[in-house]
Length: 438
Image 1 (tube, one colour):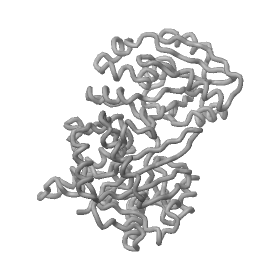
Image 2: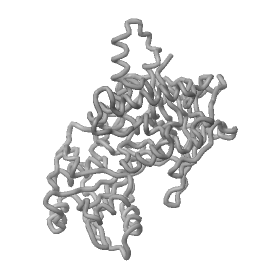
Image 3: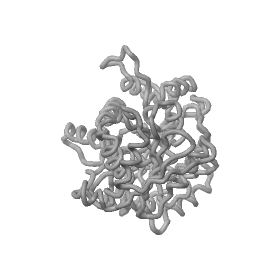
Image 4: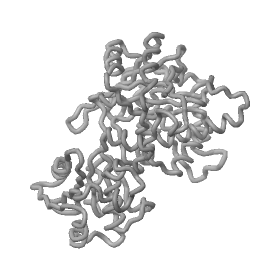
């Protein structure tokens, strides 16, 4: 079962920080140095300092971005920059943004989730992770003893009771209401009524939770919990380090989207279109689609042309000019039968697996560990721009993973390949901070 509980979150004190919107940071890792500099300049209390601070050439073991994050956090609490709520609460968190003509308005419950060994209960991690990012997150957690950001957990609710409850609670006056620097409108409500809190807690009791963003942080919290337990002979299982901060996303929400994760490929010997066309026909039907104009229209056309019915796998591949290639997988069972018989059919049918095995590995000859040659992006426009500027040889546009695919793969005890899932919008950093204190 999934056990969640209310907590006393730390939030920014508007009287001390000024405009709260300038203190909130985006939740994505590997923020560019230019953007990080803008966030630093925007407000001396911007949350990027305690989440993903600047690294300097003269950093040492005793003075680095992790130790500085701990110093900032402790100082801000002492100076009442960050103030802990007086009452335990589950929080209702809403984000609204308009992007490319589409309005996204997503509400989630924010609570503490009791950590459990993956594969033993209702908490399921969805993606493979990278050990390097795990070490980075562990350093930050061990120095600060705090959850700086929310782990995103998707849940599938058939009767929509929790979704309806969120809609009802959002009619009340919010406790926070602000706009972020990048155009996101955000609101937050504290839910302290015991009956409502109990209803929310019970509502999640039997629901599987799928970690769609923050797998690294979850496993880091498990590692930290195990370390703390080993050094606490009186551990009861109820100490603060046994829990982590989560944003619980309803799959029925109209405002949440599972976004596609596209690929950019840089080939050491360049891209041979003639060779590719010949080689890809072993497993794909290939169609050349000409587009009248380029830029946004070619991207929009690619996305429309690869939309699929269930059971189909399609990609769009662009190299140059006013055209792209649409690839449609011919034999849906080939990977399961010939390449990965030990894996489930659900795993073998994932677009990212098909792409990796039949194109990245087989045709381009790129091994799985060559991340410098194959990179990912949620922005097809960014991929297109990198191709036009010569930073990549081609872009590959994918469809998003479906909820039922996530359910099937994780039910088989497997994980989706690294960077297969992107939930949008993502919770900002600095809205609520959880310090692991009793």
